[in-house]
Amino acid sequence: MPSAPCKGGGANKEHSRIHYQQKEYAKADEIVRRLIDATPPREARDFLFVARVKLAMQQYDSAIAVHTDGLKRLPKNCQLWQELGTVYATKGDAATALATFDKGIAAVPKCGLNYNEAARLLINQNRIPEAKQKLDTLIQIAPLSDGAAIAKEILASMPK
Image (cartoon, rainbow, N blue to C red; front, side):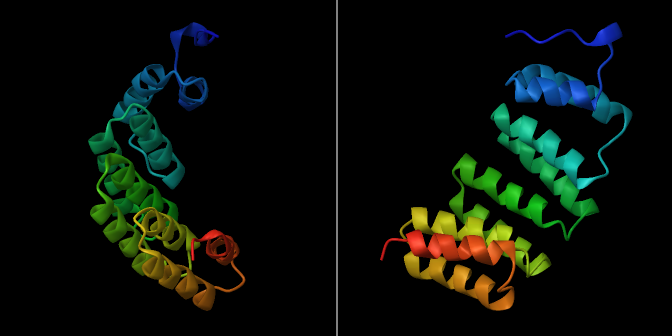
C-alpha cells in the first residue's frame, strides 16, 4: 500500500517512522538524512531509529557508525550496546559482536540485554557452557530484573 505524501512536501521524524513501519526504508532513510543534516541525534531513541533504518537497508557500516556516535554521547546506554552487537552479529562478525556485548555488560552490569544477546549468539555457535555462564551471572547480579526472567527462559530452553 503506497504511503500518503508528506503534507506540504515537508518531512519530519513521524514521516520517517511511518515509512519505516511500511518497510519503505529508502524513503525513511532520505528523510532521516535530511533531519540529521539539520539537527544531529542527541537522544538514544534517535540514534537507535537511524541505525535501524540503516540496518534495514543492509548498510551495516553506516548502522555501526550511528551506534558508535550514540555511544560516544551516551556510553552507559545498554540498548545502544546491545543493538551495536546485534549489527555485528547480523553482519556475520560474531567475535566483534561478542566483544561488543561484553563492553555493554561492563558499561551497564545489571542490564540484561547484552547478557541475553551474547548468550543467544553463543548458543547458536554451540558454545553452551559459555552461554550458561553469561545467563547465570545475570541471574546472580540482578535476580529480580526482567533480564533475569528472560535469562531463565533461555536457560530452560537450552540444549543440554
